[in-house]
Length: 475
Ligand SMILES: *Cc1c(COP(=O)(O)O)cnc(C)c1O
Image (cartoon, rainbow, N blue to C red):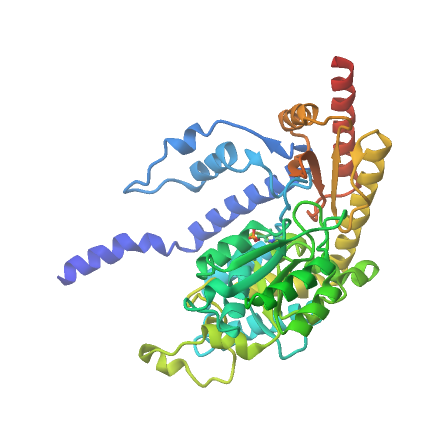
């Protein structure tokens, strides 16, 4: 047996590569990453390639070399589809990918701190909680508020919906009388969250929007009071601060008046928009954010962190803990540290040490460059909107945040715009996505990446100018 153990140890030893091999793997990975970053400004935002190598790959008994694997990433993964690290990605809501955050991820993975429970890693949990405290200050919440660093906005919204449900005592026996209000612009992850939390049978009211796609609060109030008269239980309003379609911000302060008056839970999905509250010039648009009961923000969007970073904040700390704190016999050593355990404010126990990917970039850079980048995005979007309008595109009103919409005018059946979108995708220099609002197809220009600057917007304008001229001369 001892011989066998020795033999197994020798074979398993590859899992702990020695210094030379570590250096080699790290150098190759570093070179690859550097090459990727230096290529980004010159390559398209969108491209399609075959994935032959990747498709034929199998996990085998014996390993491959780092060089072989990086080659497959280069040929079949990192340059196909939407280049989500590129400043030329202006579709959907682009993400970030700060390099300094990637370094933090590597350190978090190597040291493998257990960030679910303070007893296990008081330092890691302190970092998680300090980041939550900073985020509560961004939202304008009081310091006693609490939250959870999640993998993204969808899970963060799910947690908020569950806390609201529990706080208002919504259960199987009364769910059919529970009423939730939002607009047609609500993100679809809210519907998923309602489904996951057993609220599929609750009543959903789609409150109309005004011409700027913001919740019509007069109708909201009327609807709530009518529902009350019907003996229903209006318990939650979900507002959006920065809708996916157009970046519109619902009238948060007016909604807060209504939810306070009716004793309802006020949740704000600010996954995309929330961090613009860091920019002095647009802070007034978020008035009322600080009055909500819960809010979601996505550091992997407007804080430029790589994917895998959302946050939910809940004003009433006890409400959050009541929904998630659990005790188990096998965890008994972990109690009583005096620190708030991330495991008690969300569904996860073991989890990635997410705090570090915020902590390192925020402390290395300070907040000033983040504020500057966000303000730059707002102005770039307005610049795009103005120039697209001047080129003869139909444009929506001045963007609330950093999403502009544009379309070829006089196209009631959207045929020209559908063709135009296909042409833009085939070109791919810059990636735009589209949406349909009240039957009209619109192209969306979402300026969110920290790598989108004046140069990238000018490439985008040049691209749409060329194709618009080409299309009009073909008609
Ligand atoms: C992106 C987004 C979501 C979903 O967040 P994920 O991080 O993709 O899970 C929800 N709501 C809004 C408004 C968003 O922009």
